[in-house]
Amino acid sequence: MSLTSAIRREAFHIATIVRTLWLLRLVKPNATRSIVDIVEAQARKCPGNVAIYCLDHAMTYAQMDVRANRYAHWALSAGLGRGDCIALLMENRPDYICAWLGMLKVGLQVALINTNLQGAALAHSIAISGARYAIVGAELEQNFREAPFETRPAEWIEGDNGNLSAALATMPEASPGKQHRAGVTLKDRAFYIYTSGTTGMSKAANFSHLHMMFMMSGFVGALRPRESDRIYDPLPLYHSTGEVCAVGIAFLRARRWC
Image (cartoon, rainbow, N blue to C red; front, side, top):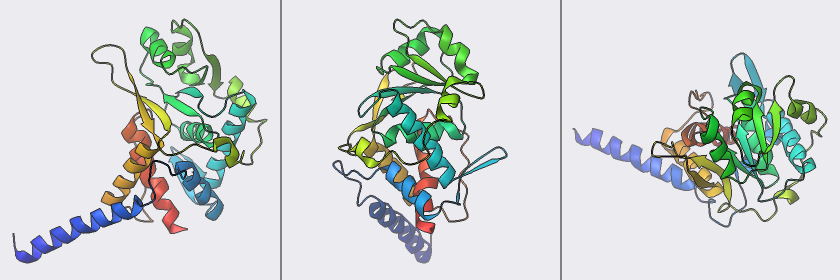
């Protein structure tokens, strides 16, 4: 390798490190600024920018924030509050992201349930999260109902004829306000993300807001996404790479282009 090539290579790596450290400068355990604040700021500054493309549907940041607000108000109306956990069992689609954003808006924690689970494994994964409520995509309703729960969580079905969809339609579009997540810091848990269960039942791993922001910022710093880039995400959203890294590349980078 020539000296010039070596210098270029090292300069590239140094620039990557500097970018990542700059993005991480505000990511501290006791900080309160999370992905929720970043998305809300994007919705205020660039409401018409597309946040998610899914098949032939485009959802803007404003639309995504409104949908997340409806989820947040629904959680409050159900009596859920800071520190409570809700299970999320749904195939990949925009509402998956809107649902967990809405829960985080009001200080909840979300158990991201593997959509391939059935029977006892499914019941176990939800039970160990302590969730009293489960948001279930209509496509997985039968799997959920057939799972042998000792104590069955309240079932809220998202889909054209689901009870959750009907409830969300009645909820306010406005933000529920930051007071509902007051006191939540980056060191607090955002998600339960599960092990594969290859040596037994799946185990729930704590996934904090801090971990989320570190992973998102690290990928943005390393990949240098541009304003015109789109992130194609074929991974399941219950998986940390599909849910955090890919989504974070889009959401963290987008805020710089308002």
